[in-house]
Image (tube, rainbow, N blue to C red):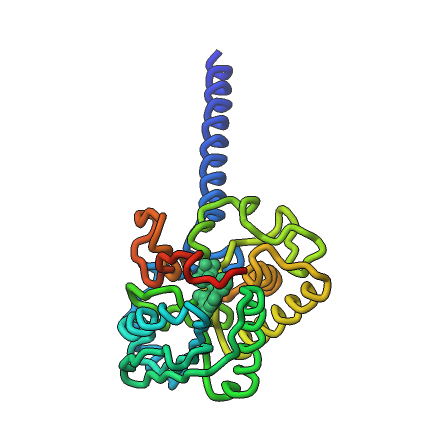
Length: 305
Ligand code: 5GW
Ligand code: MN
């Protein structure tokens, strides 16, 4: 009798033990996949609270680095230059060497903005382009040639940014890495089947269902000069193949960028703190907004396409 009782007790103990370990194991695995400060390939996802800005500044200060930064302002987008540059001068790599390359079809529309110490601005004239598709395609090629012909061995890192944006907080050396992608502010908490990847097999940007890690924005990307050069060269080629096949990826170069990042995983991912949206977004989802798309009236600023 006593033996039977203790046997039952033993079974019960086993049951509780197994259930608990199952719970712990399940909890552990699910928390691993839901970690938001690191990717499944162990690249950091940079957000407030994951770095010490003073410490990281002091580490990078020992290296004599230059960060090139490209931005395009064609047609009516020249109206965004002032806020972009002024806010960048308050928040963007303050104290580090920065060289902006601003590409525009109207150099006379570039406002005078006082550059901080070791920050420089070069304005480059590019031909006017009416079709968005030409701007988006032309952008990759212009960047590729800039890096090849002028920046090689002169700068260490490069970021390519949209101009219809503004800085509200620090964007510093915590963002530097070999290949850096930024999470799109609309999709960071969506399941991957809802990402707006290119789904037609005929496009070079095609990503099949069930694949893809994140949905990255094309409004900000960067990394080391060699890695970003390879990125722009690859995307330019893929865009050309699509054009030759009369197919245009659903979100233009953003679709191609996402395809690129599927094959070449970013070594660092920036959280949506590094590209928010001034409109339609609840601020509660991020601790700080550093860089954000400003509200714009597309019908007003975009040429008729
Ligand atoms: C954008 C859409 C349709 C037609 C033209 C343009 C356009 C883009 C333009 O007329 N001038 C221009 O300078 N651009 C550059 O491309 C800007 O740097 C802009 O930030 C970038 C991406 O275009 P956006 O900002 O309109 O795209 P979304 O997806 O951020 O709205
Ligand atoms: Mn934009």
